Image (tube, rainbow, N blue to C red; front, top):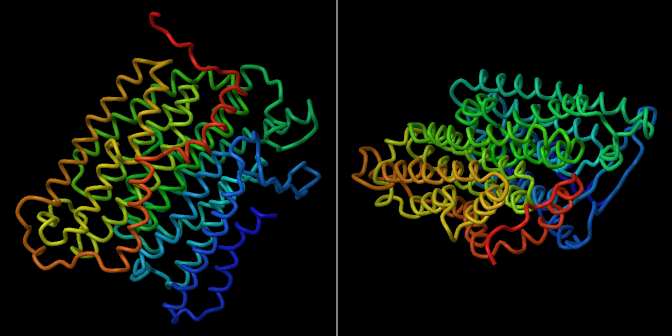
Length: 500
């Protein structure tokens, strides 16, 4: 019951906040923060009990939910789901502290804002921990509801249109996945008895044509969520319209459900179809890397810049996943974790800058290094992490992805390295415009980071630096599951080549 209790904590906090008067804004924020911290501590204690060398799922629990259809409430942790849940529960309190005033100016009260955040946290834990495919689908779709209201109710600009676009894209992908879930359920009934258990479904014998169709239903849903080019168009609008905190959870956590699903469901359930579609997916990944990078270079809006850099980063993650090597898979999973924190840092700091300047235009932030040195330098570190500078967390994961890809798809890896060159442009040029040079009129007396803002961003920067120098603890958790994923799907790493 460990995972159920941890997942229920944010939901319980949301229910308790529901009993507080909406005028008691400070009490609501304090309760939300306390709930998120308790959830993070509870999961951290659980994570310390995880046995890294033990294969399969741990902390398993399974209860009959809808026995007529073979649906169970089943949860469990492997190395990949553990690292992603840990990222999720660490980012929620950071978002609450950093966005202490984000609920102001929304359509509804602060009470509703924090209730939605906590409900979303429960869904994030559930979607990564589910080992029943139907339960996963329930969490996958349920996440859309709080995100839709967070964007549409508390965002800026054309927030309603952005929220609807996000919802429609996600629902379309979800319907395709549901069709595939029904298909695999019917097949299971003919072979092993109706079930949604992921380990049992992985044993099914499915003909190539059927497997290809079922694979596409899952993959398209995950490619939309990730997002992968050309299914990415909802993301820039959502990122620009959402509050910085919502954008952290959207790009830092929710989008990882797409790449997580590719590993957990596409490769595990449909290994032959994965092999069939790998050349196409590798091509789309490379296009995403270069397309996102090129579009990021021309961005004038700081949130748009971060959104397009993320499209490029998700191209790297998908490339590593479908390289079908243990190095690529481990690098992709570590990349998901590292991207969550580097993107969180960028959005949080961008939020601080926009709040001070009442603008999201990059050119309006000129000369911040002289006026707000702590804010400027932390943004600089976050930017360097995004371009994968050695010594910062993203470098290790990007290196593993490219090395793991090169052993099987050298051309794709070489083209992917151009994304690194472009990253230097899309990060360093805006940094030069926003932080250095002459001080833009109106910036002369902007305040530097407050104590609360420092408390929020400090652990994120610390993780970025720590994992840059010492990624071993994360890789020790990830590697065994990555090896199992690749070998169980019938793949093996290419044999080393070269002279004696």
